[in-house]
Image 1 (cartoon, rainbow, N blue to C red):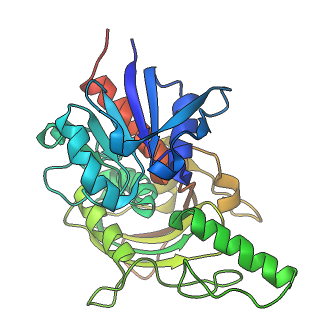
Image 2: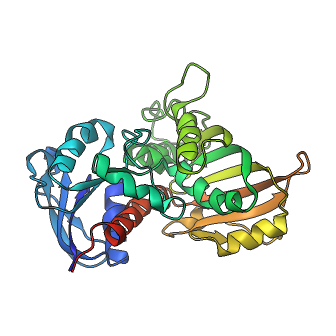
Length: 343
């Protein structure tokens, strides 16, 4: 037997990826409902490459009673309205927004990293999906933390425009086209604070009082909640003119000695990690190569001679997949195995 599954936000980048991954992984579904706002009601969406299509229903009018789980990709404001309603009706919500991530009664889960945390979902019947940059980083950090205990992390991100949704992708495309095919003045930035085409912007989300951005704060707070509250973390998050795929340059200081060779051996066997680390031209992974893949790719593992036990590495992942939709589906799989067993 399968599950009665809802995908909310089915017209967005992440919602479409959720549907594609549910199909790819042959998630056991007895009945599927796809939801969005009223302006998309009645439109059809593909269920991956299966040839099946589903008609979008209005989330405002949808009754979640009797449904097993709902994968939400509808943003914090809509989630604030609908997640409690679904959860109260007995439909477990797996939420991709930031709304519940730091709620102590809501588990924040990356299945390869902290699967046992999911057991706390019954407090609110909601499970949170982490920030896209956090998700890929903790997959790479977890096996190294287990081996040598991480003290401090310094990370700089190179985040694709798809992390800002369809509007971000459209803005990069339109600005690039305007540069190559000038038909008048380039439109001023709308989604980003400065031109993103052929540029990088060290600003994602709003600024906080200490000078960091909320995106940087998320990486710090979420990593502590998922991995270990004792780890010290500082992040600089940068938007780059890449359509899909987030990259991170990560510097790690450990309590115990660990060599680059030992780290490579550990990462080679780690769940969710694909180590591609040849010290030669092209012997590493870039964002364009990770698109459509499940893995978190790690390259450029090397020792940091400026601290007693330090490593630096390069980490790349498809942010629409591991950073969002894939992690949500993996949570759904974990939830099914541990708590919602059928048959």
